Length: 321
Image (tube, rainbow, N blue to C red; front, side, top):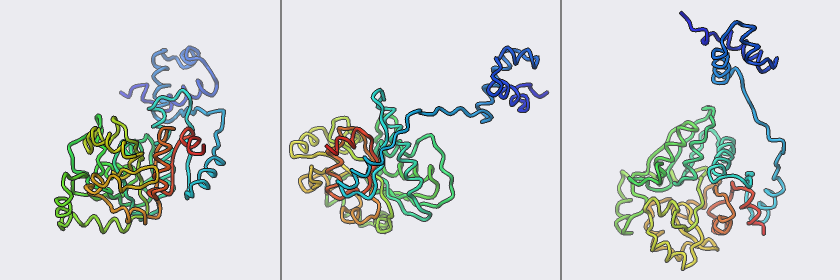
């Protein structure tokens, strides 16, 4: 026999009486001859089944259009997206806001048939795993911008480039390829020889077809993804900071002027899209928030690694000071 709580007609009636007519649960019980527990369960089913949709509206509309224009003009960027951040936000709140805004923006930026390069890191992991749905009405190809063969994880999540490409393909639809190489080699000559193999160097053909690339922007901290993933030691990081390292993007370190040359001992051992090739991509999107990332983002812009930016208010205001 069908359970009474499975009767969607009755579920709808309970929800309508409760939310539209503003009857109490006890009034509904008396009217329909149901128990309090049954009515409560039906109201819950109504929310789960989408019969009832509850929307929380922020009474304050945030519009950062002028701030976005100011950043675009000052730094010569094609486009800037600024996300609101609240004083009481936790780090998780800030990550969620930035990730959701990035997802929304990319959903409109990507065009049917695009080939899209993705970097590694927790920033892109969170973008690809936001709790939002994308209508699979277009076909994309996602390409890891550097090798992603590794057993390393950051916390409990896999932030390697190959996995990020797979995550994006699952989220947005389409296909992905793998870059079957370690991200960082210990020896540059070994890397060059390895990348000449036909089973690996096919990836360079995909690099030439990229329409957009998406990258997080890191800063040289001991708890950074670069250190946590085992790509660089804390001693190396300290040395790079002493030599002026201000940030990293696509696994390359750079200084305030966006110059990567001082860090060639590490950068040249990264199995990745060549810097010249990266700078030729039409849409080079950098994602990073928080005032502490302002200098790194400015360096990434000066180095021409990015020409589009998704950030938050704190970082944007710091960049304009």
